[in-house]
Image 1 (cartoon, helix red, strand yellow):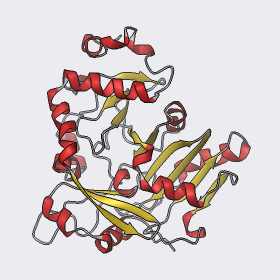
Image 2: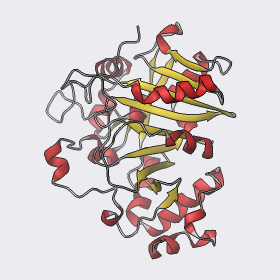
Image 3: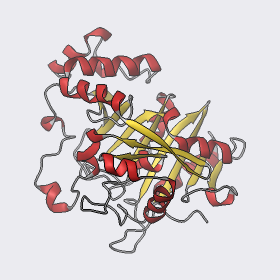
Image 4: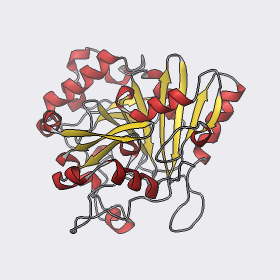
Length: 321
């Protein structure tokens, strides 16, 4: 049953909230959802307004033309303690009963809820939470359907040991696909005319890490590529075994064709992670891996350059060749 706080926040739609996303997520609806949420939630509004004061500088690493972003509002997520003890001692902020009263949700597909992320990295930033409280498990292929319904967005996933600040609750996130440099690299090196999987190292371009690109055509080859994606994670540094917890994955539409990229991971955080002198508060999740390296502290932002960024990417991902 739709909550009263949802109806108050979304009155402009003049319809039952349970059906708002049945027609997909076109640009105008994306903007309306964010505006409605910010009208209700002063904290979220203040954080979105602060995005205008974040600073960026370019990071050029071969074909990945990215940037670093100084974003003090992300300090909590970047430095979050995600060990089992810390997780067990806090309430899950993605469960409906623990969310702030100002935050509304929109049902999406059968198992998911769309939420405006109150601590944004980009002007459009959603969290897509599973309705049921269960751990961040294998890659949810529902993300493919979400991408097909939201052609302006990239739907992305942080493995439980690859940037997820809530590894106890299955979730994905979404931002505008135009914001993520890695997606442009994949589109350049993997033509739509070649459906299936492709290794970035076979493209003959300079990159800071390896990834797997998928062109998911609506045929047997495309469906085989889609079904293979959850098994393409990296290696768990604790057990030394292959793990779905070690990946960042993106789904998006390229015209009428579904694309995906999987970046296998081998470490959660780089050696330089920390707040002590000589350390950096940097903890790469999917957006960082996609080319926007988030730095909550100004001193780290000033010290970051393309050489340091390349070192960080090489530590947490796999070599490009």
